[in-house]
Amino acid sequence: GQLTMASTLSRHLITTRLWIGIALVLQSTALLAYYTKLLPSKSQWSTDTIIGGDSTPHQKNDCLLRVGNIRGIKLYSQNDEDGAVLQVLKCMGSHGKKEYFEFGAGTGVEVNTRILREIYGWHGHLLDGGHQNSTINLHKEFFSPSNIVSLLEKYDANKDLEVLSIDCDYDDFYIMREILLAEYRPCVLIIEYNSNLGDEWSISTIAKPVGKEAEIQWASNCYMGASARALIRLGSEFGYGPVWSNSVNLIFVNMGQAMKLGLSLPSPDSFPGPFSRAIHDDCDDMTWKVIDNVTISKAASKDISHLEFANAFSDIRLRTLTIDVPPTALRGYGNQLLADLAFEVHGDSQIKWRRFFEVEHVEQRG
Image (cartoon, rainbow, N blue to C red; front, side, top):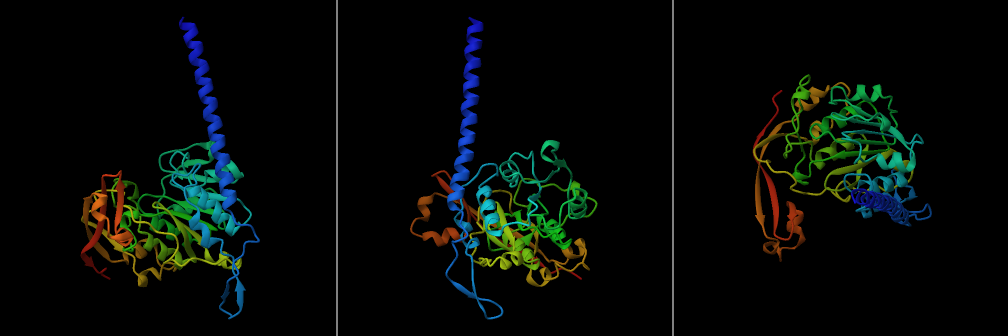
C-alpha cells in the first residue's frame, strides 16, 4: 500500500512539475508575443516635424514617447521593468556589445537584466553585497561611491555598455554620480528612486562617511536613496533624460545617442512618472540633503571629490503628515487630490496618504 501511494505521489509530482514548466514557457511566450505587438516598426515614424538647433525641420521618431504605454509586462524583473527595458532598447538600438552591468542584484532571480541574458543571449556582471553565483556572473561585493568605479574596472565593464542598473538602497545618488563622472556612458540607465518622497522634493540621503560605509545600512524605512527629482537633475548634468518609471525605478536614456537616432525625447516634466507611493513607514523627522540647481551644476566637475560634492548640499529636516482614510472619504475630490499626495491603497478599506513638510533648512557652512 505504501509503495502504491508513493508511486501515485511520484506521478502527481512529475505531472505537477510538467504543468509548471509548460506554464512558464507559455508565460514567456505570451510575454514576448505581447511585447512584439507593442514594438514599433521602423516605418512607424511621426509625421510631426521639429525644428532643430540649426532651424532645419527634422522628422522625429516618437518611439520613446510611447514607452509609457508599456505596463505590466514582467518575466524576470521585480516589477514590470522587463517590458519597458525591451521597448527602450528597441527604440535606442545598442552599441553592439550586448553588455549589461547590474548593482544590487540580490540572488539574481528578480533583476532588470536577466531577460537580456536568458532570452536574448546578452552578457555582463551582477554585483550584490550578500550573494554570489558564478554560473550567472553574480559576484559578492560591497559597493560604495568610493569603490564603485574600481569594481567596474575589476570586471572589465566597457564604458559604452548598453544597460546599467543601480539599486543600492541608500546612496544611489552618489554612486550614480561617480559612475558617470568616470565617463561610463550606458545607452540605458536604470536606477531605483524613493517614491515615498513623491515629486515635490529634490533630496537625497546624507552620504556615508568614507571608510565607514559598511557600518551604515538601510533600516527598511523611508530613509533610502534619493527622490526622482534629485536623480533627474543629476542625470541631466551628464546628458541623461528620463523616459519611463514605475513606483520603484526610473529609466534614463543617453540623450546624445537618442538625438543622433532622430528620437523625440519626453520632457522631464511630462514623461510617464514619477509616481508617489507611501511604501515605507518611519519617515518622520529625518535629515536629508537638498539637491539644488546651483550645486548640482558642478556634478560633472572632476575637480570636486565625492565628499566635497556631497557635503556642498545643504541639510533639510522633514516631518510627515500621514492620515489613513477610507476611499469613500475622498470621493468627489477628483484625481488631482490623489496626484498631489503620496498614497498607497490598502484593499478597499483605507488609503494612506502622506505629505512631507519642512521643519528646518540648514544652509551648508563653507
